[in-house]
Image (cartoon, rainbow, N blue to C red; front, top):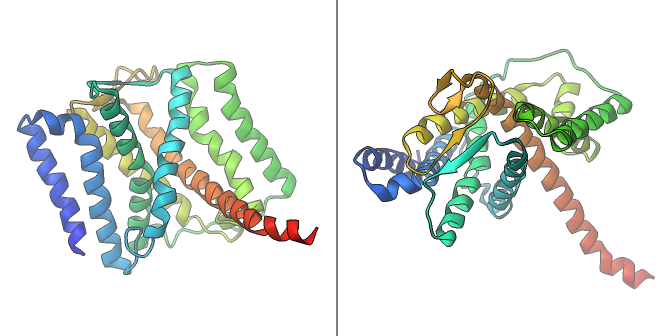
Length: 282
């Protein structure tokens, strides 16, 4: 375990002690602080297993990964303005501090999911799981894309707090066919080879992070509450039981969204680089 991994574990433990000790500052900033510690600890664990990790050999991705984590979560916040499944309380009053808290907390979402998925992969979780290879036709993949677009459009046209589940799966159907068509990592590409490890590592990683999100959120001062109407009377921490079914699909859709963003970004950079040459040729 590298030193920064142990530092991350220390951040988690100290934050817990200060929180239960009644320190008001850590109560307000507990979520981004503890998740920063988690990312450091999980990454150190991954590095100890594989001698490579996001924060060591992959840190060149951070200038893209962190802003994308914020931007992608803002999409779901936009849906929440219509569907009203959660709300925040006890946030810092000065707007600059509140915006900093939002940005810091949202920036930890995708890295935490990725570190957890990579940690499972580093321990060969689900490595032996295989399925019969399935190669969908282009028409079937186009139908999945259209289904995803329909699932994402329905809550906008007919807002209801019961429809957020459509958002958690719609992005997968919309983005993954595009990833395969663009030649990038995709679940459909894995399915053609009978591979399911990536899917299940991200799905299980999302569930693990979901439990930790709710566990750490429960005692924080600045936190979120849910108004999810399904199983609202049965809660584990702040989350109604049915809500835990969404964390796995949420992680998978973060995986496919990020892959698509990277693929499109690389194509845009290649196009921009080729632009002057095409202009000179004309």
